[in-house]
Length: 154
Image 1 (cartoon, one colour):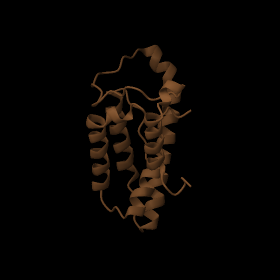
Image 2 (spheres, rainbow, N blue to C red):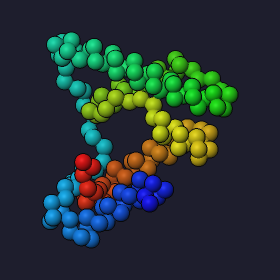
Image 3 (cartoon, rainbow, N blue to C red):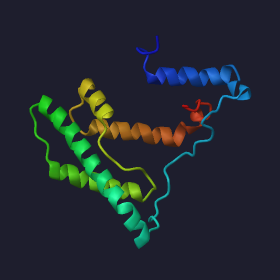
Image 4 (cartoon, helix red, strand yellow):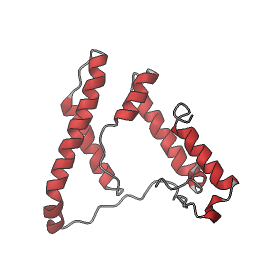
């Protein structure tokens, strides 16, 4: 029944069920308070021993992320008979990961699901990514209160 409805509908329905049936009082765990806005920017703390410990995993993570992103880009570029510039891809991923480290973010890579949605929707320019980022910012600044009763996904 829900497979055609989409994940957004399922999230809305489950959150509404928690509120309507007071499921928090019956032991259903919810997300709770979600801080609004963007995290503050700060240089991460580091030491040579931390770098030594994390460097092997960081190299592997960056290689896998780069290969994943290039593979996704190549798959969609081939469908449109286009070519991707792997140098630009590497520069973009490196820049995004450096900025992500300043806010305590996760490693940045390409997204197959987001690319597939954009491709199916007919997106042809980077404006689709800009609009997606704008929706995320609106959600972070104005909609975080709505996430309080979202059930924890266990």
